Image 1 (cartoon, each protein chain N blue to C red):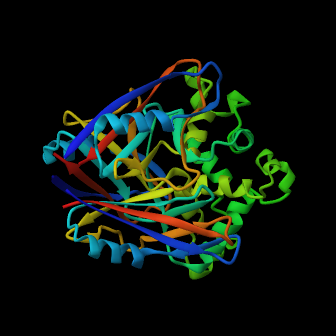
Image 2 (tube, chains in turn red, green, blue):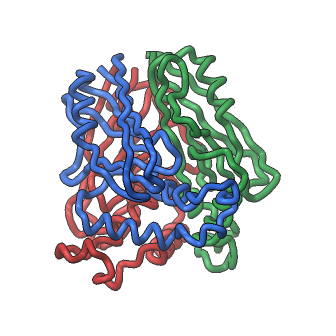
Length: 139
Length: 139
Length: 139
């Protein structure tokens, strides 16, 4: 069994954003030389997500608006977590809806994807350095 | 390490439905002859889910009603994504709540499940051919 | 390829609670002697979650309040599932938002975690005995 590990680093200048990281995961897969196996891609921070969906800017606007409706950033004082001095309780909620991680099948050395699947980093509390972990196992 | 791959195809005649696919995953597991490992089951489309819950029709009605409350299909014009000519932005939201994939342990050649766990395909934008991927790795 | 399996048992005296199980997962990882691989941690029951987030009591209060807003326990009669004699339909909803499982990378014999990542059991219909499965594969 082979294994491969890499971290991707981000410093998003906004509070919230979605970044397509499919190409970076594919590069790791080539470096790993794994032909059959699984790749785990996960946020290493608890106010960020990794998820798979469509690379369409209108959809990303919709996600942002929808997540703000389900878990509004303000009023900041409405969250007990923010009494610790943070203002990011909403980001911990948004991350649960969008998810921490994805697991993707590797077949013939490629990400085994449907026609529109793309991997995104979802940032909900940016303006600081944060990481994504890519772990590949297989043969 | 062994690996096994199979696609399941669906063409759901309604916009939304839940389909129990546990038996089909078990058939794949027998074909794979893997005794210890992991099985990944994921939607290959971004307006559909694979999730694990109870096979109880009342619960499925509740899920449908609840998802419509959290991410209503209409008004269609309320979503920026639908300006592309689609009417399925809500389906991209519903899929994030229900999830893209499940990873299930394989122990002694069986799905290592609790008493009520069943695997479902969740369709949120049907009336077209769509796929689920089953990938098994182990020994 | 090595594999390791263990069940954790819980009997939470309240309907809802969050329990940090990171130490128990680390103990399993040491017992498995796997140095490179993946660990799957999943609820074996369909009204409970396993998720990764922060061990901060204010945040856990916020999660509880937020999940009650998105999927209220009452009125019990508002859910079709509860006509079966259950009163836990809301727990099946809450579990979908918080998720069934996490997959964590194992690197150099350790959980490959960011600075604040902790693994939690999320109970949404307690006062009965329930289980979490830990499955480790790797080398």
